[in-house]
Image: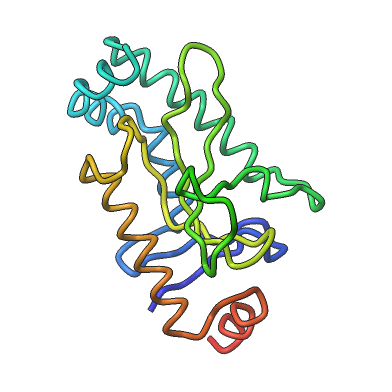
Length: 183
C-alpha cells in the first residue's frame, strides 16, 4: 500500500510516501539535494557523466550548483500560490509527447540558467489537469534515464505508482479523493 501526503494542502500537489521511507518522496529528495556528503559521493561516482555531458570537472562546483538549484526548486514547489498553474512546472516525461495521457508520467525542472542546464528532476504522475503526485526525483546527468541505475530506479517508481493507482481504480482527482477518504 502507498500513502500520499498533500504537499500544497489544497489537493493539487501530492507526494508518495513509500512504505520503507520515513518521509515522502519530495522531502526525501530535497534532503538529499541539500546534503553535502551525499552530493559529494554522488558526483564522485558520476564524475564521468558530469564531465561528458556538462563539461564540469569541479565536484565542489557541482555540489554548490545543486544546492542552489534545489533551494530555488523547493521554493517554487512549497510556495505555490493558490492560483499557480502546475501545468507550467510539470512537462511530459517524453519530450516528444504532444497530448496528455491517462496518468501521464511528468517531470519538473528549472529553466536553463547560469552556466549549464539544470540536472535536477522531480518526477510525478499527472492525475488530471493541474493535479500531480510526485513519485521521486533525481540528478540526471545523461540524455536518457535508462542509462544509469539511479534514474532507471525513478522510472520504476513512476511505473509502480501508476500501476497502484490503476489497480485501485484511481484515474482522476475525484477517484483519488475517494481513495484518500476511504483510508
